[in-house]
Length: 151
Length: 218
Image (tube, rainbow over all chains, first blue to last red; front, side, top):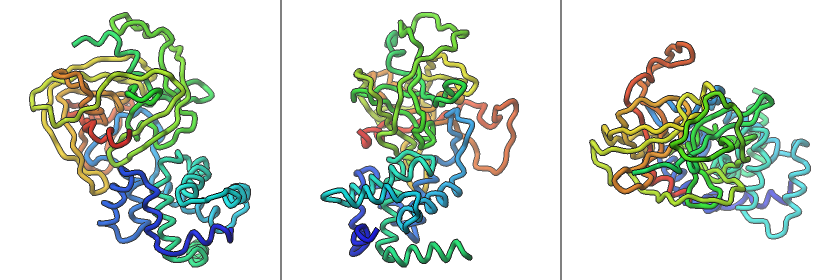
């Protein structure tokens, strides 16, 4: 994972250009009115029109609070060295010309099946989480996650 | 305005299960090859086993649809773009066709204008009957999602589960004006369900989001 560590240094806003225009516009709006990158990520996950009952017909509605926590658990496993993602980590660090866009796309796709989501839906959530990790440093973020779990 | 061939463009979204395809809502073919549009909530942001479902014989919309025919064909679909704030989503398939629907918006509609609605009402009960409704624009409203306000129209018609993702056609110019997302319901905790029906949704205040936000996803 040490090869990926260098990407979690410097200005955390370097992750924003990964987003497509429509995603970036929404994320920027969220960030204007959010206290943290996590809060903005939760808004993306839980967003649905007010005062409207959706007329899709799936019987399984997502519990969006649990969904965000599940995402964070899986991201922690990927970033902090859990063996579940060992193969994916090897694959990503072996890629030539690794860019922020490639990392976000790869991580979103890797986490999607475990979170029960599509990779494109997770892209802004991964970007916002990476902004937090870059702001804190990878090691500090992993330590903070570990402490939260133990408390 | 005639819609004999609309059944080639407006199809159902479903999910493959061991017991068959569960219908989730409505989608429609866009001007991009093999790309369909629907509501993000129809997919639940998850494209595992997601399919575009259709009846094998795509004749004319004017023909009688057999309600006892439960056989469907399907194409695997994956999420290409998804915007949960505006509740819109593009689905990618290997289909080689595209539609000639041009994407407009709700700005050009006036209160009292008529629109055409297409979708699969009662898909939650497994009914897959493409249905046309004609409705008046009752109001133009801004609806908030996660603090962001978006342009919607109120349609003076009762809609039912399965119609989400259905195209709303401006009958003046044939453009896609909006996408049906659901119906008004007061923001209250709790509620009841009678035979799987939420009584709070039994009214003629249907919400549709302006198609202008779909343009951002193309």
